[in-house]
Image 1: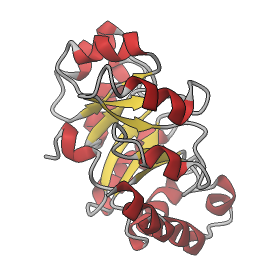
Image 2: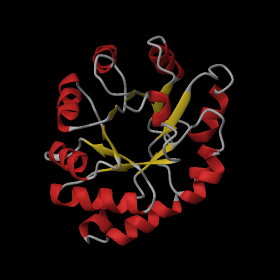
Image 3: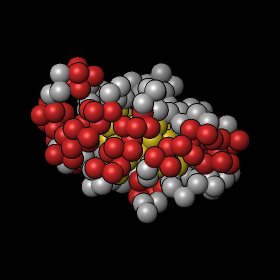
Length: 211
């Protein structure tokens, strides 16, 4: 099983994907894999998200499949049962974090402030999601807090584009970023899997920045 630290080392960009129709789940995952991206965060924002997650987990085992937008312990349990190999929350409450830490998969708790980050750090977790990244202060904010809490590594997500990605990846406390631009809804709707593969392949240019 991948651990919390290795989770952020798999790809400079973790695709944050929302899928309405489970029939699109496997083609999307295969398209990302075809572009060299070996990880996917599938959000639990749709009624059939767990079905999509299960299909990817079963039919595309080569890609590390996680569940995002985990808001409650019940959602976390259901995601793990469906095959999620890691869990991501947009924010963190004490009750949610304590439950996540009982599960047999790595977790990436969401934080937006230094106080929230310190609260998560008290539980021994040093890798966190910074959300919503652009709205919560962006690269300037993360750079400012790297000195007082250098032991924390972030995966910023929210409002990041291909134009701003390198600004985040250049920071010493950013291991990777989350991005929805790799799987635009228009491409999924049109079943333009090649476009998703092309976008995924473009992330290889970000690897040089992240290394």
